[in-house]
Amino acid sequence: MTESTQNTCAEFSIIFAFIQINVNGFLSRPLTQLGGLRQDDPLSPILSNLAFGPLFVANMPSIKLLAYADYLLVLLPDPAHLARLHTQLTNYSATFNARISLRKTQAFSLFGSPLPERYSTLRGDNVTD
Image (cartoon, rainbow, N blue to C red; front, top):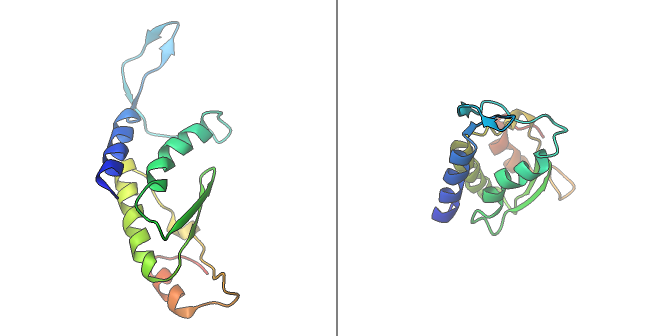
């Protein structure tokens, strides 16, 4: 991640670390934010855009990202880019206290047939093919 992206991630983690509840114009004391929003909450898409934003602007020109809600599709041109993606996701996860669920991750070839050399790397992370 670039320095400006890391700074942005750090700023967002500070902003969203605490919440206050407004009851009849009186704010509660700051509470630690321990959970997320309900799945149908209208703020969810906005917060997803804010949360994923730094990942989208990370310096990964040859890696393409497509997102919908909290799903992310990553297009890698070759196996060598997997290590770079893993580094970016690790930095992003540490900054935002996020978890990347590799058990829910699936990999597939867009070339029409499996490429065993690609999948051997992924199996080490429990990614299915």
